Length: 170
Image (cartoon, rainbow, N blue to C red):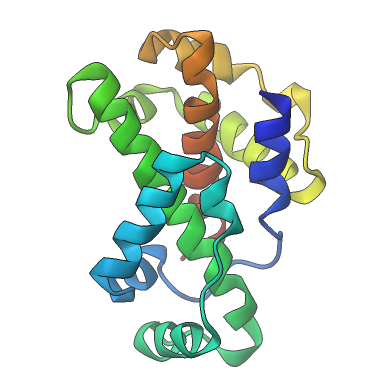
């Protein structure tokens, strides 16, 4: 699990918050490209984060969502974070038989727990590991999702994608 987590976190780069909305970037990505990203997660959990966006796609997304030129390097990471959140959400919907199960569990966490998980995501993105002092809320989240050991990479993928999106998007 640590290897998967390291692969997930090393793919992202920390930086200042984007002056664009992650949802705008996601919606501006053509549907076929979004589905290809989501399918890549289903084939290989870490495969999604090895995905690249063509320079012309990044330019088109920047124009569609008014991303300043100096922040265009973050577009790929934010699109992939949104894809990671969406793909892991699909996993949990299949696993639980309930659409939006993980989103509902996330929303039911206390603000302190969500803040802790966001901080973990931020440190994981920055150093590839994450500070364990921010990891205390993960077991509570896992209990809400009735996560088994084999589910944990998907739970952590959701936290990483959601946390990155919430931290880096306006």
